[in-house]
Image (cartoon, rainbow over all chains, first blue to last red):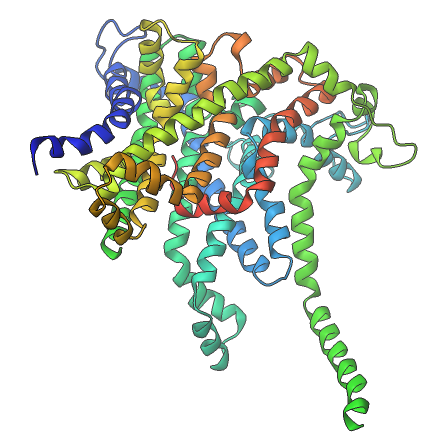
Length: 302
Length: 296
């Protein structure tokens, strides 16, 4: 090939690479550098920002909350998504049922936050409840609860005062409401990829539906579950919009991303903000390696 | 004769067996319908409240609105659109989202074409690099990007946010399109090249038209991602006159947190376009989710 021919691919790549360099590669390196500098990035302060992040109680709460999100959001969305995928696959109105569960995926976290602030709306006991959750609770004879405000964990807190705040679970529930449809759609496609012959053979051999699910469907579906889980883990770690609009991180609901935003714009400490971002990136690194490995093995089978 | 006699018998048996099948599956139907209703209810409450007047919303649950006399109103929509900047914000969201969708797709398609159908040293390594960038959290880029845009004196302008969304959307777009382009039949491209077509011609006349489904999926994704974005807009567009709806609603929540009739109608205005896209293009939407599950 002549010299001009060799140049052609790079011309097609150039616009993408320019933009990726400016908006992703350069900023990532620069953020790493800033995380070792003081608030206005004029002096290097070594690991000072990281030391602050890991010892300060507000940031510790945020880190802990991200772990809560990571575990409960991922497990619940994958679990419910799997159940719904199995159930919807057995009825003729599959498409409609799926659409209902899937709709929240299309709307913004901001709109979802408004929807659920309204669902969780709280009035003291003697007033009419206008939020559905508290109206249901009072109808069942329970006391209305300010779901988005810090609540002690029942029973557990009496034994051992816990840094876990129940309002985080109210937020995580909203995340699950939004993302279960995503898990369901992908898992349902995975389910349909399992050959019916295998399932029929198991049925002929006398396996119960329960056994078929645990012994055949689940193992065959595990690669798909891994794909869904990695996406949800990334979502859980980067969570910002919903927490920001629902509680603004108040009452012990801050996550790393909301705290970073506060460090940037409320406290104007870019060093600490950058350190928080780096922690997010480091937490996501394993996911990145898994994604690359999965991509490589897919390429080999192409 | 026999057949005629047997017929009602058979259909009766068929009816009984279908009935018993239905009854045995009743729990499944109840659970599924219950779940579907549960999932829809929160959004339905929002929609209902957005058509009720302020006093009604504040004094009774939205589920009580469905008894006579019905009293629904459009006042809330009129109020948020005119007094609370939602009208302007709707336009801003469009101004941000349309170029924020078209530019990255076009730019990504060029790169995806090279990755899928051209040979050059380091191609596979570079592509893996793009795959790795899929999961980089946007938070990791905000501070330098903001400083850079400020130094270039374009922070707060629409082109700045178009470029930012292009940069952030590119890895996913390149990834999705390259996989789709790469699956197109080789013979087709080879015969086009044999006929003497240039790569520009092959790209515009062959690749793009054949890839409409992938382009549609990607367009839906990128559009919804930009339309629904709050963080990038908060950081880059600090001028309230240019704020998209997500930012305006967030401000409404902090200043009118208890005025549900305003918040619900504002939120519904921001949901309308995504919902229309969802219902009209559900097939492409689902297709896109299945092809590129790893968007960071």
